[in-house]
Image (cartoon, rainbow, N blue to C red; front, top):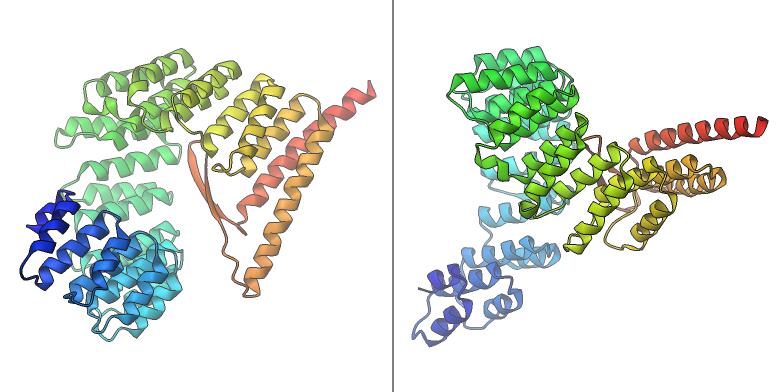
Length: 481
């Protein structure tokens, strides 16, 4: 009964029932403590857990440890784990997974190596954590130590190798698998397509038994990603003719991306008609892709129509950012500003991507003061971090207005930031524990992830230097007249 009340969120009623119980067994104690943890009431759970008369078993301890970890209170979970009198494999696995999720992969490894008894989950969790950190060689070393593997172990390793460009090594593992799931086939196909080995990916797709929509989408996505948009469209038409699978929102988004890449308005219109007869017309992901497609095909009015039609469904920033970017692409700065202000009026908070689109729109349209005002708004906004792309937009803004000195001043500020990143890198190399930040940005419809010390910052600096060089050349020409 207590378990049922907790699952329904009636935690107060569960506690009242618990207090009037003539006898409480370990199941009752564990159910209520777990209920508190699931509701985020850590204090109440801990108070109950620490009571002198509390009945506990391994499940009770695991519920507390798991609850702390889900709330990212790793130190408290760790302390409780080491106080646990009889640690079972579940407790070890819970703690290892907690370390992995919080980015403390070395702590996870240390704990893993101390385990006397491991199960498949122990091995898979560590391998997955290492892959996510880019430590693929170490992951492969642990994978090779496994005496027993399941299909998930193989899939994790194949995915990790493919993600970091070792697609041929991944294929060797794929061929060694004793049994393959649909996920195995999809993982290997995706690996080939993402690494540009399109023919190999297509051949493997053709060999695959029981193709699912994810399989078709992986191939379509690979063709789109590598500029073979017409083949992506042909693949989509072939999928529809097969009648065995139906496209999902991911498929539609990738095919719309293909239409965008070669400005295939006719194909885009046909696809829009197909989408309008499915449930995916409600998807923000698909609406955003439609906006982008119409924008890239030069029909910004149709992009706006799609945006207005889908406005009531826009529960996050995806569609708003797409519309602002569409207006930026067409140098409609005032329209971009109007969308931005309407977005704020409706209670949506802009993020880094929003500001990139907005500042680009101001730059392209020559709205210098407006761009500077919004840049100041960005710098005052503590919840949104100023990125290199924002500085690039402002340098471009100054350049278009002929304000070269201010552009140089901003360049110097950005240069100092880059030097600071170099110092952090040196600290890292010398073993000082200064944790690097990780950032993502959406540029040109691709997500770029980078951390302090990454070489990607150098390319941003090169881009800025190119802009400055063009400005200086223009300024010298003006001065020579």
